[in-house]
Image 1 (cartoon, one colour):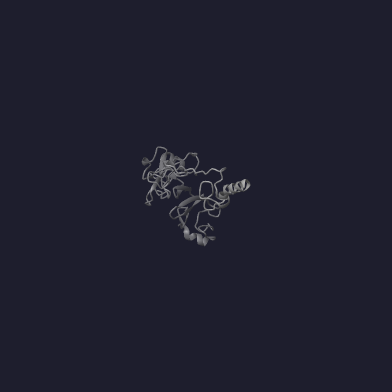
Image 2: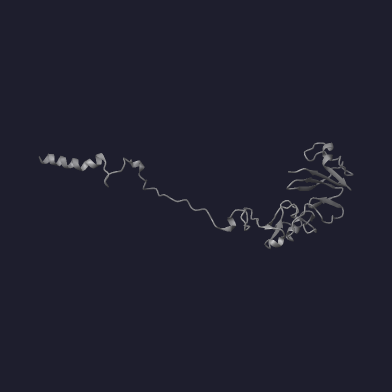
Amino acid sequence: MARRASRLALGLLLWPLACGDDGAAGTTSGASAADAPDPTTTATTPADTTTDDPATSSPGSSDGPADSTGTSTAACTTSAECAGDEYCRWVDDSCGVSGLEGQCAPRSDCDIGNGRPVCGCDGTVYDTRCTAQDAGIDVDFLGGCATPAGAFDCGFSFCITGDEYCSQLGGSAPTAECLALPPVCQPPDCSCITTCCGCSNASCCSDFCTNEDDALTYTCPGE
């Protein structure tokens, strides 16, 4: 009788483990051990990478922060509206004539003695683009400066008459460069350049050429 009572008591003790229980001693809703959190791991919250620092705000913000290149995006019409180490820069080198808004940009830290003369937005010829920037002046692609002796206008700079010709690209972001005349171009003539503006012969190139007083210039259409 005592042995039977002992087996009955043991069975009652094992009953909750075998069948499950909604109480504190058992697991709930048949969840397995795999569903339980691993005590060896710790949940982490990703770091907040947002910032209110104006130096890292978007380039288009209205208060003119610096962009990823360190260039200010503050709008301007003259360099007087920019910081002391900046100047008013127009990306199309129009000095604002095109209607494009100027932006304050850092004055270049470059060799002011390296380069060729340029025409500034103030109508002054500067020794180089660097010296113009150092004076707080952007270059003027449309010209308007007094042309140095022995030279002719090529964008905001000047080519050497008789030694060089000007190759220009028009459009919203015009460019210009002075290139050496080949020996067959003496005297300079629109028929002597055979490669220009996508052309591969002199007849085609002559459609884009002007030649006034040996100022040989090829102007290619841009976008």
